[in-house]
Image (cartoon, rainbow, N blue to C red; front, side, top):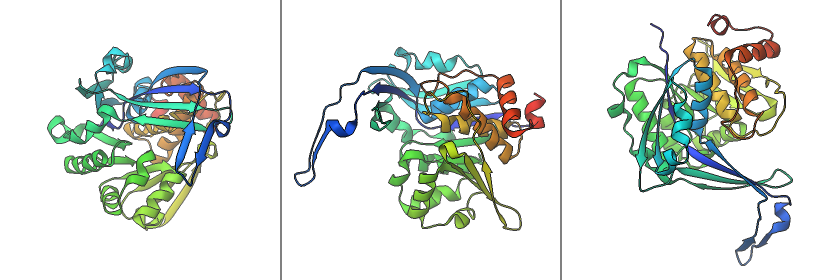
Length: 332
C-alpha cells in the first residue's frame, strides 16, 4: 500500500511586513569605536501574514491536496485568536497537532523593506522555543504510514531532537536548517546529516554547512542520498550519487511566474512540491521540478500563504516549463 502521509516540523509564525519609503543607509547612525547604534524607521505600511516554515509548507500541501499532512509545532495564546488555526484548518488533509502555550505568544517576524529592497528583520521565537520539548515518539503511533518528514527551520536543539526521533521511528527525513545554519556546531550538524536522507538549503546555507562540518558535497553524500540546493532566480540543483558512487548534478530552472510580487515563502513552496511528488512516488528529480512549479505560484502574491492554485494550473505550468507532465501527476 502506497504511503500518503508526510510529517511537517518547523516554525509557525506571524509575519508583519512593513514598508519604508527611504533608504536604510540614510536612517542609520553607527559609531563603531563607541559601539553605538541609532536608527529611526517610520513605516508607511504594515500587513500581517501567516508564516513560518512549517506553516508555509503545510499551506501549499493543503492546496495541492495530494498528501495527508501531520503538522506539529508549538504556538501561543494568539494562534487561534488571530485566525491562524482557522486559516490552516480549512484544509481537510492537514491534521493540526500543535501544542498551545497560553502563557506565550506565537512566534513573530517583523520585516521592514526599504526602497532598495534592503530588509531589517526582528524575530521573536515565543512559543516556538518550546518545540524542543515535543516528543514525536509519544505522539506518533503509526510511523510506518509516513513516507517522509521535513525537519525544517527552528531551534538547533529542536532540530537535533527531531532528527534523532525520526531516525528512531524509521521515518525518512529531509533536513532543512535554513537561516539557523550558522548556529550549529560541527558535531551536532554531522549527527543530523547521518540521520537524514536529503539535505536542502540555499547556496549560502549549503556553503555554511560545508564550512561548519568540514565536509565537501561529495563527503556529505556519504551520509545523505541527495543534496538539493536552491538558488533563487537561477533555479536549483539536485546533487546525488548513483550505485557506483558517480556524482550527478542536475540543474532545474525556475518556472517563470506571471509576475513577481513577493518572494517570501517561495522556498517553502518548493519543499511542499518535493513532498507532494514523493508522496505520488515520483522521482526525486521530478519532485524537485514540481517544487519549482509551486514556488512560482508563491511569488505571484504578497505574503507566503496568500497564493491560490490547483492541480490543473500546476499541470499546465509543468508542461509549459518542462515540456512534459510526469505520469504520476497526470493520472491523478
